[in-house]
Image (cartoon, rainbow, N blue to C red; front, side, top):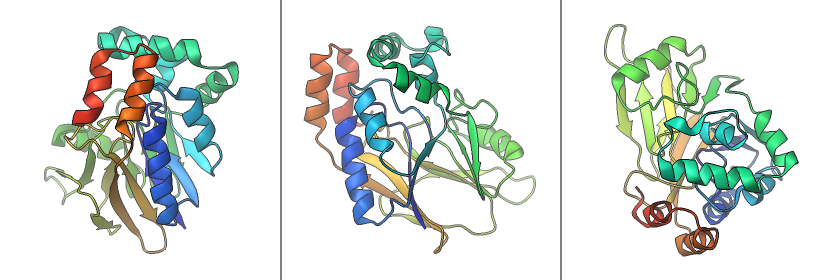
Length: 245
């Protein structure tokens, strides 16, 4: 079985469509696993939810998903993010709200734990350094975990006892073997990448080959930006898509 693992779609339909086309070519649509933040920032919340639900699809909740349905205070959000959450909240249907409300904070699928941020703080913590990675691994009960939230493709490796966890950025086309060491795997962001590469990011999990492969996919950024302008979403959120920041 080959699984598409994605995160931080952020209501960016052109990016999601491009990723799913690429995943289809990779024969990786046996299942689709999402690591949260399906909505927020972007102009297509309902369309993205509808598209994903055409597939064998499962997800955990992200902070933007919870904020958009009123289950998370936006006081910790920056003003642009809060404005986008408010816009999203006005445009979700009752059915879409119910779907987001039902998402768990953590899922376990066989050998894999899925969470948006970290197992210490499921929707808020960014795993960007060794301390956060160590705290996450201390709570990880499975060999491998998939996380999102940072919008940056990353791999974390649990070292020998007492040593500092190793983290590095994952590159397009890089394949990692699922071996004995416990791993933290971040596929990067579909809808708003933040590593300087504006292309959408995702990963393919091959359960038979026991590998994870990272991918980048170009998409029609201008189409998303045009829809964001029409929705009067914040200017910086529109501009940053072109920079991958």
